[in-house]
Amino acid sequence: MTARTERIVETTPTTTEPVNAAPAVTTVQRQTVAERIIWYIAGVILVLLAFRFVLTLLGANPANGFANFIYNVSHPFVAPFFSLFGYNFHYGISHFEIYTLVAMAVYAIIAWGLARLVTINRPATVVR
Figure 1 (cartoon, helix red, strand yellow):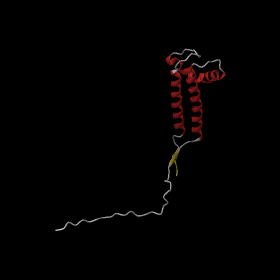
Figure 2 (cartoon, rainbow, N blue to C red):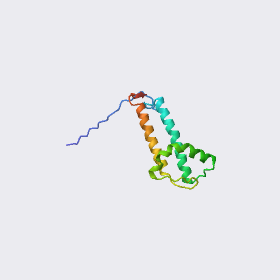
Figure 3 (spheres, one colour):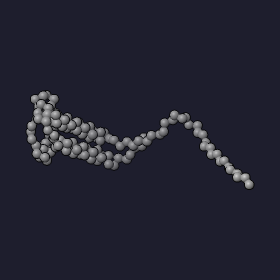
Figure 4 (cartoon, one colour):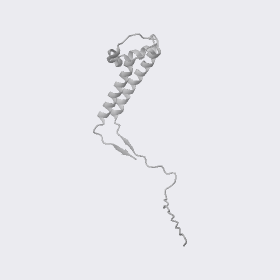
């Protein structure tokens, strides 16, 4: 008795699509003008607070025009958080302002919430 083996060859049909064709990309757009404005304002505030944090961490001289400008402009945004951890007004001396970091986190969360609020009933637009 001889053993018989069968060979099965599967073929796949060829397509006529070009090899370098890019796959269809689907993105969802939900941004409105109001949402962009909210994120722009939040971005400006967060950049000011980041500059303030770095300048106080490095002990920047408040007599310098740039440092004085950053301290004065960012002061109203950080002032509500001064009493969280105790506020010591010592510009020109290097210190870690934890309340500036807390302010940055709070403003980022508020901006995210407002941006979601203005797009709450907006349906997603699919772009191909």
